[in-house]
Image (cartoon, rainbow, N blue to C red; front, side, top):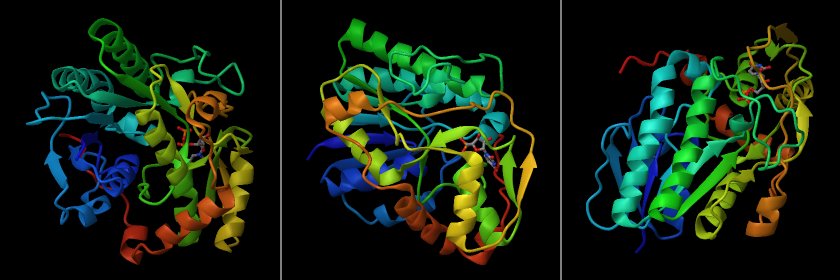
Length: 324
Ligand code: UDP
């Protein structure tokens, strides 16, 4: 049985990855410090023999006993609200955390895939974004703590590949949505759905002309799986190229939820990218991968998840202790 370590295991993407690798008959070690993750995302796995959970912060030395075949590094805050609340932890998990995991990969001769992001392109001046584009990032803006940590992460990963010969993979993940997103992390999908379900106004930032391209989580997980098992070491964009303005997206969600919420306009966050759409030619060619779940189907499944939350959860605002 192959053994895989998944960091950020209690988070949105990490928990779906745990499910996928369990289904592929791997022995899965999930690791999380639970700052932004939630154990309820993986509690169904605790009874399984081929699942273990380590409550650990990867910015500290990471120890795993015995053999290890693969590492997926998915631990990181991943929303603009989180970056503002926990900027230092965001920087540390992408830099020190990645360093520790690369060291572990070297020690165990394991293959490691790191979760990078479309944020490495910043507010892009090239559209759609190809992997060759170097990006347009404000190092000292509010998103800089995430963007630069992820850029550093890519650099150190390539350096470990070049100098130590370890097997590395880099996924540049574009906006992804689906069940288990945190309702109140500020990201647009749970924000709009939560507002509609609570009967509140839907808050569009700026004039809503900025664009995003949303990928359903199952498609993304398939892309990660294929990339891990491929032999390609350079960054690969993974996302859904179907682009939409945020205003149109708000209208789509209002229609989907069958509510008649009003749209209200708020100021645009600093350095909020104006356009984002992945060019996924590389993933198509190298991995024979492209998204198969369109937004209407993906949003229906996502809405069903949020509709199942209790009233208490739906109205609870987030009081996480970010001080640790
Ligand atoms: N956004 C919005 N209203 C909200 C939350 C987000 O209009 O209540 C906008 C945000 O300004 C951005 C887009 O939706 O332009 C996507 O935001 P998100 O935080 O989900 O992801 P990112 O900006 O990192 O792509």
